[in-house]
Length: 331
Image (tube, rainbow, N blue to C red; front, side, top):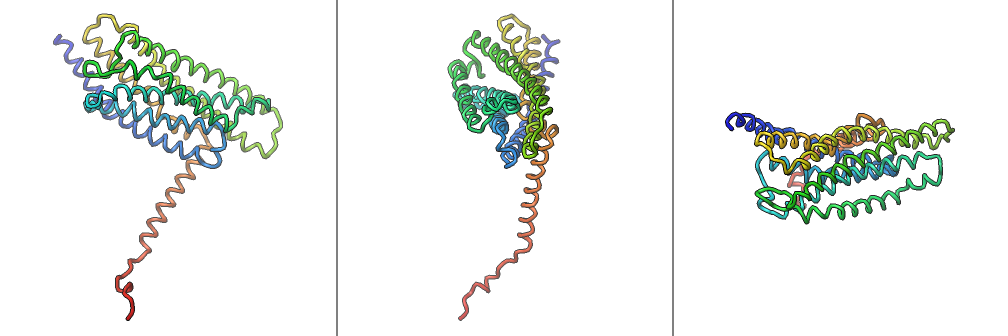
């Protein structure tokens, strides 16, 4: 056992350091990015686009996912602060809200991909699907579905042996399989299918003569499609490794494993979880790099903020204090 101690100690120390440093960086930059994304897509030139509504909903979901996912990882694994020990009810609420928001984020992007397919279609009837009213209804409906579908987490998650865990092995296997099938397989497949169909629609529409008044809107649509394609690629690269390893953990859960193997698996799982959670905070940076229109709107927002700060400082410097003498009434 003594030969294993140095390796185990090192892995535990490295995992804790990752949670203290890397996790905080992901959390801070992710939340800032999501807030800026919301600010950009609520601008007048973009908020009328139905796809922007789905991206807005996804950004809000990402904020919740990072709060109930990354923040708890930082506190528990990085600093040893176990909030669930003080309030066991958090063992049910924390994973529930995390999974609800984590899945919602990907589902809203999936709806955005479907929306881009219909909005770029030559058929006027199919383009009717891409309307703000339908987008609002689908966002509300999808949110309700996610809250209902993940209700099992409240039932089967509990505070067991000083940690939050499921009360049944078969339930753990179900969660791993569900995550793999729905989040890591079904969602990307739908992304890819509608991405290909959208590209086909765009290629067909380029051959058609478009009136000048619609050219700007088509440019916005093309930019958003391009941003979504890059986002889909990053989604697959960031989430697939953790989903595959999670399924492996579930399938080998009942096998007898050495302490060294358990520590190594826990370390790999922690690293891959951090890697997958980057997906909840990277969208802003993808949009900034891939979208010209997004960068223009972001620049406008930054200029407004800087102008406001400058005017506030200028106003503070130029306004002279009022002497109390002048406030005295004349007799």
